[in-house]
Image 1 (cartoon, rainbow, N blue to C red):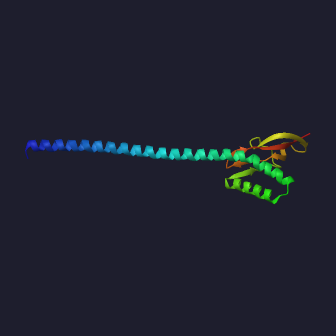
Image 2 (image 1 turned 180 degrees about the vertical axis):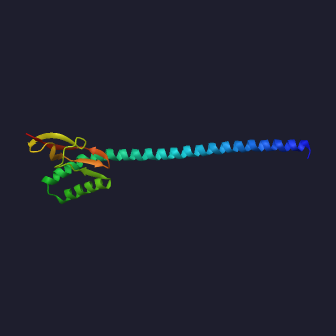
Image 3 (image 1 turned 135 degrees about the vertical axis):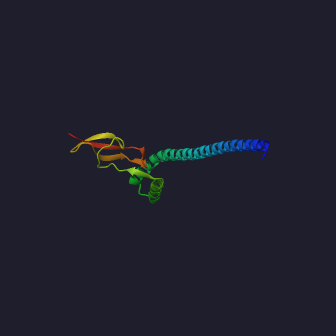
Length: 153
């Protein structure tokens, strides 16, 4: 083989290596861009879900006083229609993962309760009456319960 042909082959090999290197760089950039895009999609989806969750919680918080009123009305008005509506509203809350916070006859917890009245009694810090029910959705407290708390004399 002639030296000219050998030089040409060597030059072509160098060009091939450079092209491989450039191709690898583009491949890495593409994979990085793809990963960034997938991460962006996940983040946007999470943010959207979080926004929907917060909006639902705000709506539920606005509905809670209506449920309070329905429960008060059910005590004084013995109407089957009112009872059905109240039960549907409570079922709606359950379907949304909202549950009443059970605090009656338990130790007062300032994270779950707001003491609105102190009454004399035989025990300290025991919840003796619930004035307004508290609710949570999962770990999130939507509204603390308003309670009467017993204190020793």
